[in-house]
Image: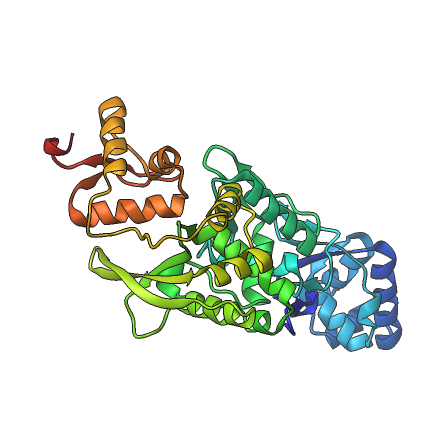
Length: 393
């Protein structure tokens, strides 16, 4: 990978590629011409023969189009065939028809607004599953989900993304995850545990690309209040700084936008593991106006909100973790009486705030002991919460 560009030759050898028929014939013809026969060609490039001495892997090139990338690499190296002449129709994984990219846009270019948006969506509201390597993206706003799907298609080619409207989740083919992990060196698994970094090439890219990356990050995890724009993320306790927030701060500075932090705002335990929430804040009218001009939001509510706060004088108001928010308490009481429980999504909808803000509020009330988990998160079902004491009803 060089400057955010990944070629097919950078991918693992077990990937399957579908070549055009003429291209297959041409490569095979050159190999036979150099070795003298198909059997000798198989021996020269160290491909297996059958028990009867038949070069079956080589001969598949005559009647099949889908082959291991390792075989194509060997043939190209041996025959010194021009890589630019190789015409690839699709890239896939063995045995998975849906897990493929049709008409791949080679080389895959991540050094563009759509490319950095793909990376940003994975680093914030998305992720790459640890075992399956399947990329996913979750957001309640359909406009953001559609933008991410569009970006994936523009970067990779024609892919079949699986959308679950019930839980606002989008799943992309495993082949995309393999490309991101092996080509882009992105870390898979839980971000609170592995503390991922922003790829280095993004800091060297154009301001347009930096703005697209930051827009996706703030659309996913940002919050806008009456006098500031913030983004907060959590990681397991360690001696390392929060890599994503430090990277965002550096990128904002390169766009001439000042920010404060990252600073700790919350500590809590999940089992025996201590987790720390950090926050990065953009304050004062000048910086918020620069943010709106250079980055802004796609998120409809946040887009509307930033216009509203800039239309009047900014006031010094901050959410206080030390006092009980009566509005939220009232909503939780109402939901408790009506349904017997409440969820983060219910709270976000009722108070007309982002899901990220409702998560912060729930974490605060959980730590305070006001609420508890009634039913834990399971599969696609969100965790159900309830008030601890009847005195809160």
